[in-house]
Amino acid sequence: FMKSCQNKETSQVAGNDWTENKDGQKQSEEDIKMSYLNNYNFRRALDFLESHEDENAYEWFKKALEDDQDNAYAHQCIGRIFFSHDNNGEAMKAFRFAQKTMPESGLGLLYSDWAKLYHALGEEDKRLEYAKKAVEVDPECTEAFEELSEYYLDHDMLDESDAAMDKYIEVEPQSSYAYTIKGRNELVREHYDQAIRLFDYAIKLDSSYIYAHTFKAEALVDMDRLGEACDSFIQANRICIERQEEDDELKTVKKTISANIRKIFFESVMPCV
Image (tube, rainbow, N blue to C red; front, side, top):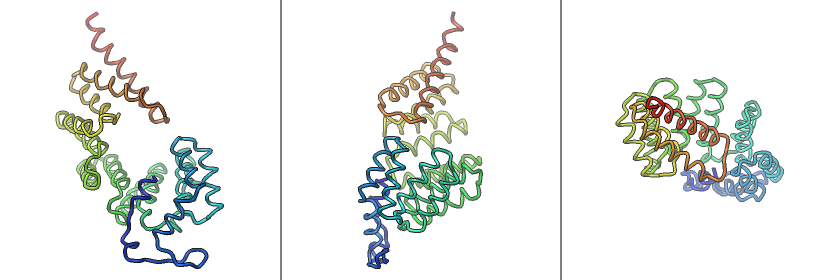
């Protein structure tokens, strides 16, 4: 989140797009954005958020809003916390507050979050609308391309899903994630050889990316190459074990990997017994 906020440079800033702050002083959009990001309470909240201490993060984001109620990033992060805890109504309120004062350079990420929220609410038309809005305001918003790709996959539009990932790769050519998603799409098509080539390339880019290993293992299982599949699952499990901090998603992945290793073992060994 910080990387996305801090590394964006907008045309509005370059064009000296000035606005008045709450004290009536003229500031550039970049100055306003950095005033949010440099707030001590906000940065403290981000530390808690990144270590998955949501309750503490929430309290510190509220302190940041006491310093400046227009801190759009604090509202957005609060919305993310509510969303992660399935409190979608409060998440929606927080995102609406964020939109009121969000610098244009941050709208892409905000609309991407909004698209995910609409997906959780089952409003697929809105999900697509906001993912597209994210791309319109920020053509380099990888989170928007991620959400578009997932939307198209969910609606059996694999070519469009691939196209969204191609746009992602234009922005981040070394993205292990993007090549893994393209491989997953080939796996859905049952183009196993091409899927494995993409997973191998994703692993070459980032050997610690768990999902490249797990999807590769799934492709190998479908090809009845159980020994190789087990090796890939074991490698993914080793990466999980080496990760010191665990979130709920990682715990779920570890359980899935362990179950697959046991299944492959019994399928490959028991017939011989």
